[in-house]
Image (cartoon, rainbow, N blue to C red):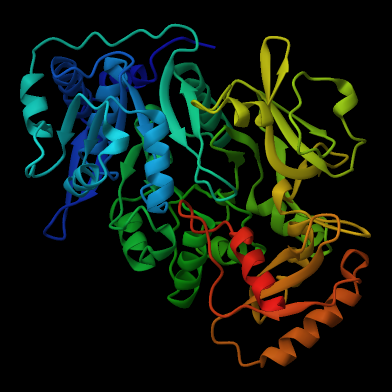
Length: 545
C-alpha cells in the first residue's frame, strides 16, 4: 500500500501523454469542448495554489457541489493536491437528509454552482463554520470568490508541490445514498483511493489511452487517475434512469468510447432503445454496472449491442468497499442465470484479487472483534463481509454506525456489507438481498432477491418486491408487482400466473399474497435502481388495513 496522494496519477499521465484529451464535455451550442491531460494537470495546480491562498488548505473539510463538467475535474484534483478533505453528497437525496449530512460534517469551505450557494443562503445552519466559499459560474449576492478568481490567484510557472499524505490521512468523505437508512459519511484515505484505482485497472484490464463514458460522478473521478479520457454525456447526473439513450449512443459513437459505466436503470433504458433501433457499439470493450442487481433481461439486451468479445461486468461493492467481487455477462447468461431463475439469488462473481470475502451468521448487533466462530458453513446464507485494501475503516462522526458495520481483526478492519448471501463450491459470491430487507415470519426467514428473481421471469413483470407486513418474527410476506409497460394481460391474469409460478418452487410455495403496485417502484436517488422496499412496506401495510 502506498501513501502517495491520489492526485499523483494525474501529473504522471500528463508527463506520459500531455496532449491526449482528458475530459470531453458538451458545450452550449450542441458541440463538444475538451481539456488535455497536460491542461488538466496545470489547471489543477493553479486551483491548488489559489485554494490555499483563500484558506482552503490541508485538512479543510470542503463540500463540493459541482456536477461532472470541465470545471469539476480541475477542482477535484486541485483540492486533492492541496490536501483538502473533499465532501461529496448526492444532490438528488431529499432535502432533510442532505441538510443532516451537511450539519454533521461541519464543512469549513464550500464550492458549488449558483443554485447550491442559494441553498446555502436559505439554510445557513449547516454552514456556520464555512470560512471560504467558491462559486462555479455566476456569483450573485453571497460573497466569496468565483472559480475564475481562484484560478487567477493560483497562476504560476512551476508545478505545484502537492501535499504528501501521512498514513490513514483523510482524503475525502463520501456519503452513502441512504437508500436503506440514514446517509453516512464514509471516510476515504489516499491509500484506499489508490488501492481502488489499482484494483479496477487490474480487474478490467483498463489501459491508458482508453475512452470512457462515465455516467456516475465517482467513476468519472477515477478516469483521469486510470489514464482514461472521460466523455461526459449530456444528462442530469442526479437522475441516471432518465438519461436519453439516443444522446448516450451519440456520445459513445462520436468519441469512439471503449468503456462505459451505467447504473442498472440506465442500462435498462439504453438496452431497450438499442435493440429497438438496431444500435451497435462495436468499439466498446466493456460495460460496468453496479448499484443494484442487474436483471438477466437487461444483460441480454445490452450484449446485443456489443461485439462478441465485449462483456457487461457487474462489480459488487458499496461506498464502504469497492470493488469486492465481479462477474461478466458471458458467465451469467451461460451459467448463473439459471440459478437465479430457480431461486438461488444473484451471482456477483468471485472476490477480486486483494479482497477476502467471508460469510458470517446474521445478526443486527455490533460485533467488536473477529472470530472464526462467526462463520457459517459453506453454502449457508449469512451476512457478507469483506476485508482488504479497499475497505474503509469508519464513518465520519458516527461511532454507533461504525460499530455496527466494522469488525476489528488484529490491525485490520472487516466490513459488514449489510447484504446477505453465500459462497458456492467454486468460491463465487451469491447475493440474496439486504439484511434489513429480510422478511421473518413465524415459520422462518425469507430473503428478497432469490424470491424476486423467480417472479421477475414473468414476461408481463418488470420487477417485483418482497416486503413484510407486521413485526419481525411474525411478518406476513407480500409480493408487490411492477408491471412491464405495454403488457396486454390483465392484473388478474398476471397475479394468477405468479401464484402458479410460486407453487412450482419450494422457497415460494407458501407465498399466496400478491399485489399489483400502481406505477413504478420508488428507487434510490443515486443509481435510480435500488428498490426502496421500506417505502413499499409502509404502502403495503396501509393497503392491508
